[in-house]
Image (tube, rainbow, N blue to C red; front, top):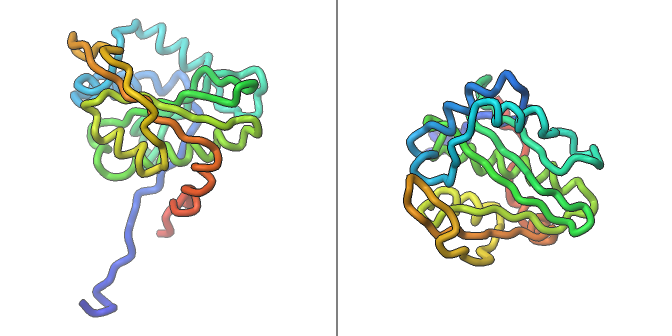
Length: 194
């Protein structure tokens, strides 16, 4: 291969934007996607309940009263997913994160990039030490996101959740601040150059 044949990697830009009520329909579509239904322990919840979650979640990490955060994932001008952090304990320095993407955005590295941006924001909280996530044992892609970002498998909760009527084991993955600081230098968090 000649040097002129080498093309720079072109990655779509990924941004986290504050979740708002206007994102409800997109979020509902993502939740209804075949992969979400097959791999995520999603309870059937009324539209109003999800709308309340959107309105009660903050996107302001500096808000000392906030314990729940949500952003929508935007790529190429479209909302393609959501990332969240919940049950933040500033005292204990821990928070749980979650994420989901639209069907057409899976398998392109966009989830890894979105979660990396989420981690970068969350670790600006000085007291935050431990971030964890859960994934069903069948969700190999989500486990791949966790591994790429430096999370370690911390345990398995046996028979912990129900997905499409079937009881499933759920894995717990954790990431400590020093592990993130070591890993983040290896990741590209800047938007791609056009």
